[in-house]
Image (cartoon, rainbow, N blue to C red; front, side, top):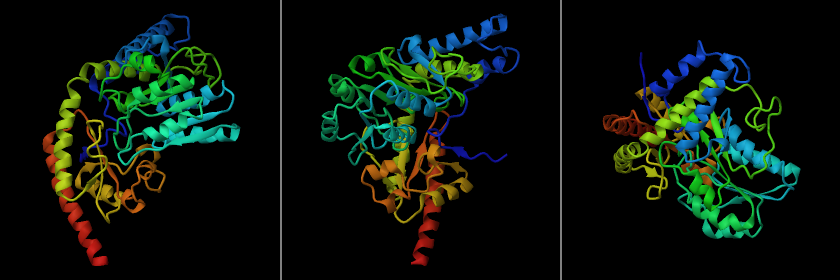
Length: 385
């Protein structure tokens, strides 16, 4: 069976065999509902409690601060809409490069009297300090700035931003979905400087799809999106996805154990990849900025990103054009547009996101395939002109 080299880990990661092994009993013999009072139910409840402890430990939070959800999108919506529901309408400030699952619920709040203030970013995708200071004068009730961007890999100085916003009294949230396993995360430290909520997701860190969490300071009053039986301290009703939650716990535990070693190896492959891209004439976005060690976003002049992704897939390499979560949107990346990249360049954007199983040999093979593919596409462009 033909299996392309997988270079799209920011979209989702392969399930770690250790995680799968932990999940299997909960897909078979351990089938109890965690709300049931009998032995099957008690075992399921214990498994969820243990997973909650593992997720909390991985990011130095308290287990009671971890609210399980079905995905990062739900967790982000739970904060944005849930926190807004407990407040009088005011200003919600979010960076212009947030994931759509933050920006779209924020836009929906405008119909309820909220004012959305998008925070400008510089050409590297970092929140502009002067614009952020200007936004704080509006005393935003809610703020959301992602820790790591899913497209460019840019890392924000969330600690400094939260500290600056703290005196304003607003609730500060950070989307850390892409950061888990790629850099150390310390919620207790972030919470100390003014971060009140943080989103995590299992399938971005070798765990299963269908499990995520909002790590939430218990002082924040959040109204549930889903009402019902009162699961997750009343914040997320619905029968728990025990297999996925168990997998999330193990994946988080493994991520914390490996975070000292994996980023170093990823950074080496990233440097090799980007040297090859630059040699071929590619434009690497935010190349010299502080980024995740696995993420490279690039474009070639006059080559469409979707076309290049399709050609590379046929050559045996699975890459992405922009964000997989918003692939139905044909418009140029809103992240690159916020960074001031021209639309014609942004349409050519391709993302490589490396994972634990990738090798330097695969990077060399990819560069060779890319060189041949780009050469053919540029030849066709020349003929057309």
